[in-house]
Amino acid sequence: MSSKKIFLFWGQRTDYVYMRAITDPRGLYIMKRLSIKSFKALITVFLICVLTVSCDNPVSKEEEEKTVSTEGFCIYLTDVDREDGLTDQEDVLENSEMIGDPVLAYNEIISYDTMTHTIDMSITRKEFFKRVATIGENNEGFLVTLDSVKTYIGWFCGSYSSVPRDNVVIMFDTVIEDLDSNQIRLKLGYPDESQFTRPDPRDNKSIFERLKEDGCVPR
Image 1 (tube, rainbow, N blue to C red):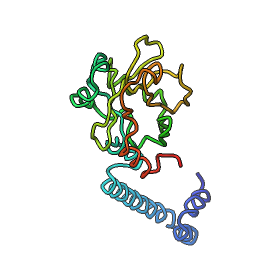
Image 2 (image 1 turned 45 degrees about the vertical axis):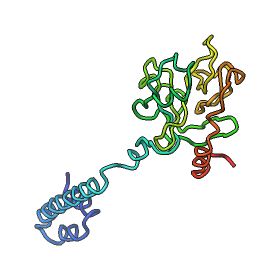
Image 3 (image 1 turned 180 degrees about the vertical axis):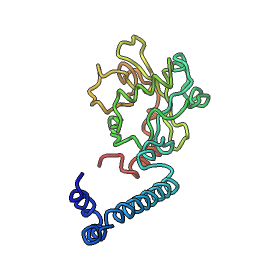
């Protein structure tokens, strides 16, 4: 590389050194020496900044958004058996336990339609049921909670089932429901509402008030 090219290259970055290189025969050596020192100083400052940011912010914004929220309205899998869906629901609810993290956390609810009990989620149905399969294995029951307090119990069901359900159900498929790819519905009874003979547990005043408070209920 010629002297002229060297001077122009460094001159774009350090005007003082470039001028010395032109006016002083020793300028090239001075330029290199100062440039190396400047580079080392720059690296040192950069590392200090990175370490400071890392210490002050151990959890990034993206990681915070991914943090599972157990407050508000959540859906958990539970440890009940299929036969429990045919027995007294109050007893089943009292003796049921939540399994793992919510399969639907409160911060993943975009909106809740209180008329149809359809939930718009920030995740897809596919992702929702992937969690169900991963956490629940062959488990078919779920719990609806409000601030980690058990509110009511329900069951997952497929349109291929020949067993009527006197429960709140979430359908695995959309054969008998018109839903978008990011929606689920808390349905009353299977195959239809005529199967349901108990008071509707979905009409929970505390849940509705909380959802309205947080802007999850369309006005």
